[in-house]
Length: 248
Image 1 (cartoon, rainbow, N blue to C red):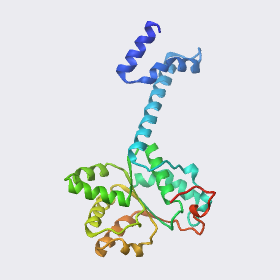
Image 2 (cartoon, rainbow, N blue to C red):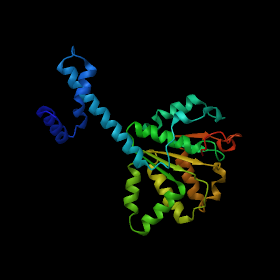
Image 3 (spheres, rainbow, N blue to C red):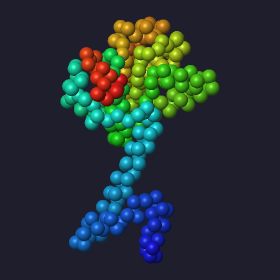
Image 4 (cartoon, rainbow, N blue to C red):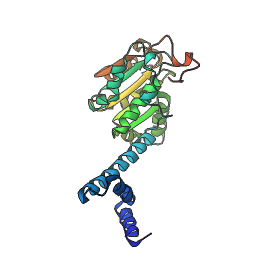
């Protein structure tokens, strides 16, 4: 390695611009007829693109998705009550910018978890902070944080997410204490930050999950205000077809 190359490597490390070490690739792509400004712009763009990709990967990793699902993997023909154009519109993540919520209601295996994760990943790709929980995991973390006097810290972490995804709100019954903690998390986000909730139960059946019906009414009111309520019910869910992709 010549002295100039070593110097560039040293400066790139000190300036934290690692892609500058690939300046020869930029030179080859530009060709001999381009000027210094063109070279500098191309080099800076490559560094910016690299940083954006790193940020996106970091946001996806910290979101806590159980696995990766994308919009491209969705079988739109299986959605019997919502069309592809509307889902594509949601994928723009304007609903997050507008501080709107999404509530997905449908029988098991109809793509609710898949769509939730895909929308969450879209939000991460746009530079948004996202957190994914199952309702059971979120409830347990809240209870545990309170027991160890770390509830305020956890609530602050959750509040930093522009999009909070609560999956599988239907598989367990919450006692009064759990209900209060979940209610506070959702209530604190009302008109300030977005929530996606997926559930197998229609709203009238939520009484089977929550003891406090007054709080339940307030919870539903906050979730459905400025909300998209998606009917995800299907007579041919993913899991019913052995040849299709498994998804909630």
